[in-house]
Length: 506
Image (cartoon, rainbow, N blue to C red; front, top):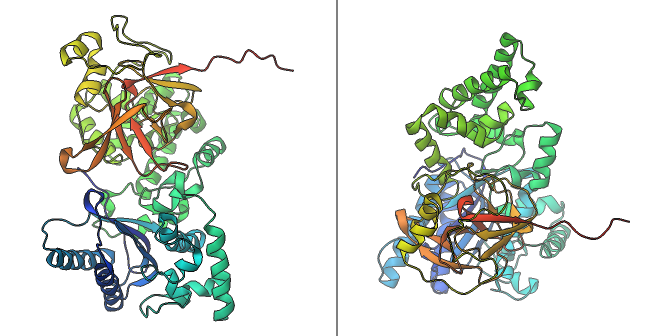
């Protein structure tokens, strides 16, 4: 499965997150905690890595650091490998301790530094490891106690943090304490644990506002910061990494090529960018779509943004061309954005956005919640082939092709196999992953959960609570208030629009 390349250069600010495998703990007692923290401190000194904030929890850890000359990867490898070896020896166990590889987000300092410091240091309080801010000030397994001078870590850059709050140490420390107290009243702040456009500019409403204004913003899921900051990071990436990135230069080359072709064809640039369906615009758009994807290496989504059409429109261009091999490779890359493994591709004519279930399905009901226990042969008989492949055999539809991935209608989503009520539209959000995503279900028993360890990954499969149909997967990177992302397949969903209000307008 393709994974994003690490972005790093000496002096880069990273928010690093590590978790225990299968959700299990990475520490069992204070001896383990002391081992982890002392190793962190020794390596920070030895490698010139600056540690601004950190918190060690039972099954995960957060670190805000600035990489040293040896780079982030070398530092983290020595920290995690050495700790895991000692942990296994002490507890007489074998195998991996940490889940997959650690997660690192490059962060722009000016807007995010202080928020990240407080977010990380407040982790023990929010998790219930301590009961108050006063207890947090004495908590040994987080960096807050060192900044409050209740515990000494000579390797932690406390002065660098306090410098933001004043020149005198005492008044700066009090200002820092008040800042953390104020930040403790905030919610989950999921934007501080990831990158990408939506997190960087403050939410989906801001993304839509940018689009309405016709403004473009560079973004990358590994970077939390402004478009200009993202551009600088990508341009500074090492030559060995650049070919793997959706580089700013490729986007600029595509924009230049678009202007050039418009001038040579006598077509106004705004006609292409506005999505005009005039024959000459459509023809040029098809030619440029192929060039942008194959020659410039742009994604379908970025190609669509450049050409003023939807991602599914670009997808259709390649499907009609029959470029099966290319499409499969790009699909695998798109699937990795959702931590999903490539499954058999599923497509079905979406038709209208109204109820459209199989008339021959006698088990379909939007009111009956009785559990269904039917044989595979029965389901194959009453479901369409495409729905059957996903619902009963766990196939995955192509990213950005489902009828609901970017649909904004108001109403209720039901299971396409049995009619069970699953989600409301007001729980739907734009996740940019290419599949419809929701942060909560209609009711707690709308869905069931199953541990999925296929393809060497640890995921949570989501099943229909009535018929057991495979719907998709749930991830822990969603927005408030739940922090969950239910990443679903459109083809196993059916949408029921809200009825117009009968109240007369005054």
